[in-house]
Image 1 (cartoon, rainbow, N blue to C red):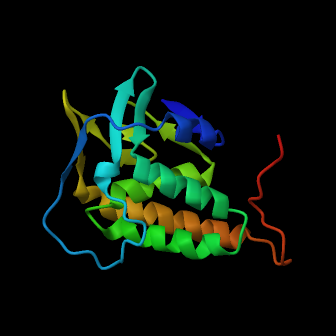
Image 2 (cartoon, rainbow, N blue to C red):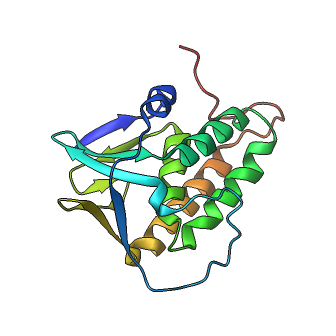
Length: 167
């Protein structure tokens, strides 16, 4: 197992490329949430090595990540991140929403050959298989994460408990 700190977001954004396709085992369902970002599970491709799984982002997903990263220090970020979290229940884009939320969180998370921050990914010779049965667990993980972050917020306006530390 390996923990990864996603504070070096710029490196990941610069390295984002498209390689292969992800196969999502999903029943045909309609989305209750509106996908204002235009992202889909096909916007992330998975590769694996001895360090574990690694998501590679499409240009569209990279632009979305850059946009949300710029918003992080503004009042508009919370509304945008809520829209992104709403996509976690959609079988067509829950993987991409999970990846973006993870990268934006700048928290340490577990990476193995089978899991990337709680998401089970099975790599095959030409694709990655991700079962939609895990949608409730992934969505619950982010709801719990959001709830714990809200509890940690200071009561004084203008200061955030999770403000980035200057390096």
